[in-house]
Image 1 (tube, rainbow, N blue to C red):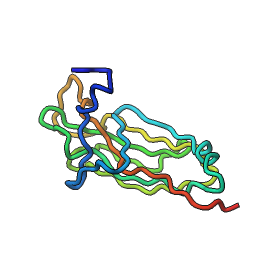
Image 2: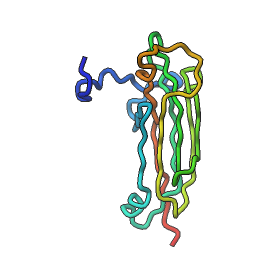
Image 3: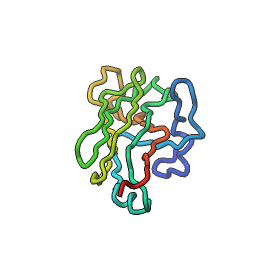
Image 4: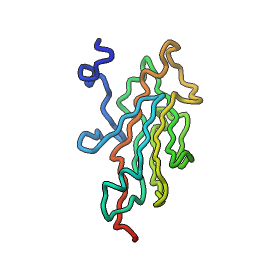
Length: 151
C-alpha cells in the first residue's frame, strides 16, 4: 500500500464508468469528498482575447466501477458561482449516481466553485471507520462554453 504518493496510487483510483461506458478518451475531473476547487473566471477571460465565457457544462457522478462490497459511496455535490448555489445534488449513491448540468455564466461573474462532501443522507451501510474512502466523484468532459465577445 502506497498512501500519500499519488504516482504509486493511480491504479487504485477506479475508472470512470457511466451508463455502461468507460470514459478513457474524454477529459475527466475527479474530486474526492470533502474537497473543492475554485476557478477565477476573470483570469480565464483575460487569457481568451476577444472571447467571453458563456456556460459551464458537465455530467458525471459516482462511477459504476466503485467497489461497494465494503464501502458504499455517498456524496453531496454543489456548483457555486460567486458564492451562490447554481446546482446541487445531495445523497448521491450508486443507484442515483449521475449529475448533469449546463450553468449559464454572466459577464461579470467571477468565481466558479465545485464542492464534493461526504453524503448527507444515504441509508446504505458503510464502514464506520472511514465511510468516505470510496467517495470518488467524477465530472466527465467538463467544459467552459465560449463565444465571441459582445463588445
